[in-house]
Length: 90
Length: 306
Image 1: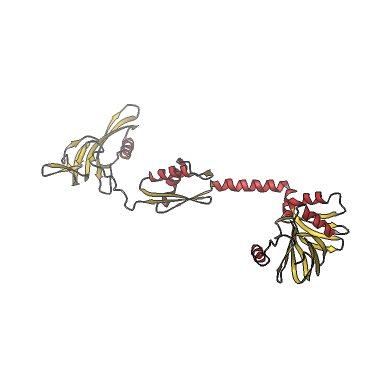
Image 2: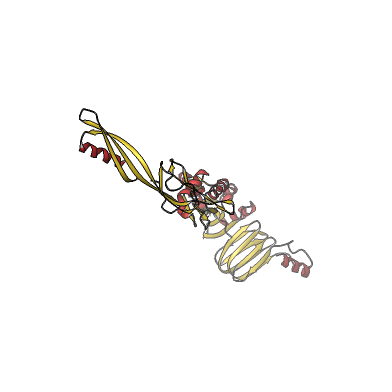
């Protein structure tokens, strides 16, 4: 995560942790979310996560919440698609 | 990673996903969330967070159903419901530790293994025995006691579990046997024959000697100096012994008295003489005089006296 922040900071010139949630995709394994406000929907094919500043809809197969707490959420399963809605304008 | 001690719980509500947000906001981390139905979720939390879960969801529209221990919490809770089993296991563990501290068998090995009886005696004197503890101090004292045994040049004690292995080694050469220094007369008499292989003769054939008198000395003279050695000689003495007995007067009584005297002679009878003194009541007092040859030797491998 620190390397990601450094790269993002160099590219965008600002603190990436401020202003929105973060999503890290682990190909074939799942996804990690930071700054999670809640879970809107949960099923094996679609999970909607409420992030700070937006909503992320994750579609895939065998999705399940492996861990949720302290603002972090870990999704387990094969992620096919992540759709973001809302968030700050670039 | 799922914690080792955790509980599973089912949350029933119209919108159970919002319960997760409440729990997350309350600092409870939920794991392995499974959606059982649109109104029912199954979650897994750390066992120590279960009370917090009940506290957070108390008074809300979310119902906790079927909270049960999972992973290691399940056998732990089963064990806590059986205090007798815990007490028995603790007692067994204590007995095992105690018995491990005791010596249950002693093995004697090495060249000195044949003197097991002496070794066990020495160990017992130092406090090392079966069904007794054997600490460093006792082991050291036992080692000292073993080294004090005759001929022992090496001793070691080693604990192998409950078995004490005692290794004892003896020196290869046996100590020189002690030899008698001189030949002494076993009884008073006259020297009939004297043969000296080693030492110095102090008497000659025909000399009268007393009981205990030295016949052959354990030294010899060489170049005017007396050199100590051990005597190696053989001698035969003619001793006179007198016995008296009371028996019936007549030849039969004399024979009986003579037989009794021969049994008590203590040597080879050379000559015998019987004298009778009648008492007048049909009995007589017989005086039997025997001349007995007594042989004696020293350091000839056949040491005899009499």
